[in-house]
Image (cartoon, rainbow, N blue to C red):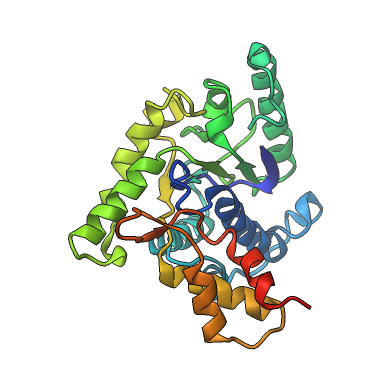
Amino acid sequence: MKLGRAVLGLLLLAPSVVQAVEPISLGLALAGVLTGYIYPRLYCLFAECCGQKRSLSREALQKDLDDNLFGQHLAKKIILNAVFGFINNPKPKKPLTLSLFVATLHFPHASNITLYKDQLQLWIRGNVSACARSIFIFDEMDKMHAGLIDAIKPFLDYYDLVDGVSYQKAMFIFLSNAGAERITDVALDFWRSGKQREDIKLKDIEHALSVSVFNNKNSGFWHSSLIDRNLIDYFVPFLPLEYKHLKMCIRVEMQSRGYEIDEDIVSRVAEEMTFFPKEVRVFSDKGCKTVFTKLDYYYDD
């Protein structure tokens, strides 16, 4: 689990069961785009300049998302609108909570969950007391002990103050691999019916995702009051990547290494990837994860 100084509440979900998107690194990459954009432009270097006002450019964030996130029209639209709607609201009634489905490092032992709850509350309270515009990123929610995350429910609810502290300008981001099968099923259904993936709407996935995560005993959100009380504002799904998205990843990697784009190499690397379902080869089963190492073969210096 990772905690930062500006709080955005998103639940980002990626199809990890079939490894269609390489969810962990994709979710972290997106979180990196958000925090890398927000921190220097709005929150400076943590609490030292928390009170300074800086302008936010919607166009700049849009470009960052377009440059770093492929095939994810839902995620980009939801995040862009949610973040700017929240930041531009001078008096939000609750923190923004987004769940990106794609944390046992700080909380390894289930037997100590009561202690962990107290530590988590103190951690968040201390950061928000120092800077109201804090972002908390919870990584690998699917590995967190069930019940632990409910410790932060008071901070996400519709309260003006909790023990004298306001959390209404904070943002919480949750990264998770839960709900994977449902995301993939929807994407496949659209493909089989001849529809474009860009036609997938949030309403086609969001409810089923929240129910799936809520009932998943292996998820940190199992029977969580955060879902039961509708305290997560957006469930943000990551769709499995197609052949064309892999080629986008390869081109970006070429450019980052200073190479000219060679479409022949781009196609050959993409063809070496494995896809599912096997009979139709629609989605990459490893996302863009291995295209970078495969590219090394063609540029062996």
